[in-house]
Image 1 (cartoon, rainbow, N blue to C red):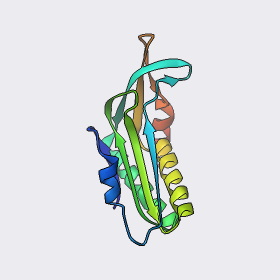
Image 2: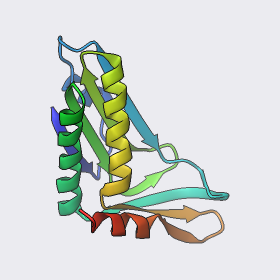
Image 3: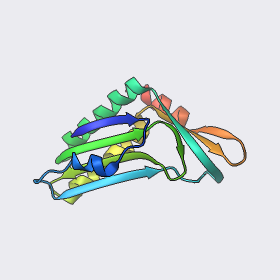
Image 4: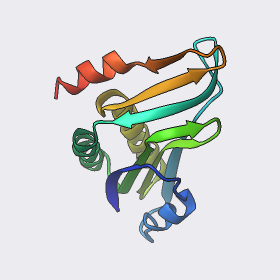
Length: 147
C-alpha cells in the first residue's frame, strides 16, 4: 500500500498496519502526531484542520512516491485528519515498511517533514483564553504555490 489520504473520521492505525505487512520487510516504523494541549505558551482546548483537498491529495501522493524513489522501502502510507479534533486525538499517521529499520526510519521522517511543509492543510487552534488562531497558515500557503 502506497497512499496519502485525508480522513474526516477517526481511523484505526492497527487496521491500517495490516495493509503494510510484507514478509520481505524486517523494519516497520510509524509516526503518530497527536493534538497537544499547549502551543506557543497558550493552553489549547481543541483544534481544527482544513485542507485544500484536491491539491493536498496530489501533493501528498507525490511525497509518498518520492519516498519510495529515495529510499529502498516497500510501502508507505500517510493519513491526515481534517475537521475538529480534541486533545489527544490522532491528527496524522505515517507508516513505512522496509527490508531494514534504517530505511524505514529515514523514509518515515522524510514523509512527515515534507507533509508538514508542502501539503495545504491548515490548523486552527482554540485557546483557553477564548481566542483562536491559524498556525503557520501563511508559510503553508506560500510554500504550496512554489510547487
